[in-house]
Length: 202
Image (tube, rainbow, N blue to C red; front, side):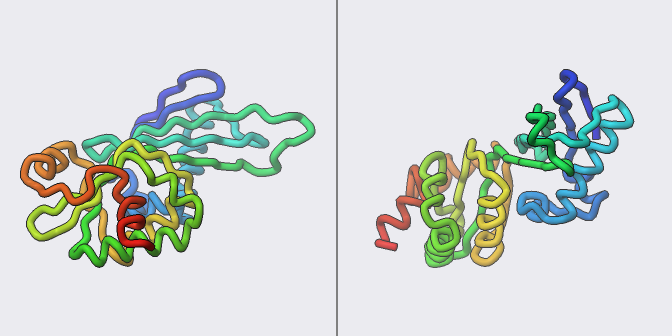
């Protein structure tokens, strides 16, 4: 892991899956706001405090994490200025994760059941998935490709719970996405989740 100080209120952390594994965290656990992933960020803040005197006591912390194509993470941690009358008693972490990811489903029914379960969990928030996703059939497997979507942890938790039940995370590789584009059959070319719900009257 590498830390870089951007300014007095912002640092950037660079880490990969090996760093997560050293904290006994897998990718899905990290994406679903598990207690271990929260502790990981608190550990990062402790390192930043020791290295840069980046004190987060009585501050809200905004964490924005980008998952890169090679499976590494770039994480911006920003110390938010709070009103003196509204001081936080503990470090309060707010996080969004912007990512491009590919998920696999063994059948179309599994994908449709995933969409239905996600809608049941998110209600009106399902519209956050209305862009930047497609469904591709390749080698008898259905792949949901999601790109440039930023999700807060509450929505990520529901998303990962539904994925774990009906599908699985495969990759965020540009090469694999290229293979899907080149050799796969497009089933839903855009807005895959919302269009699947609409087409099937869910």
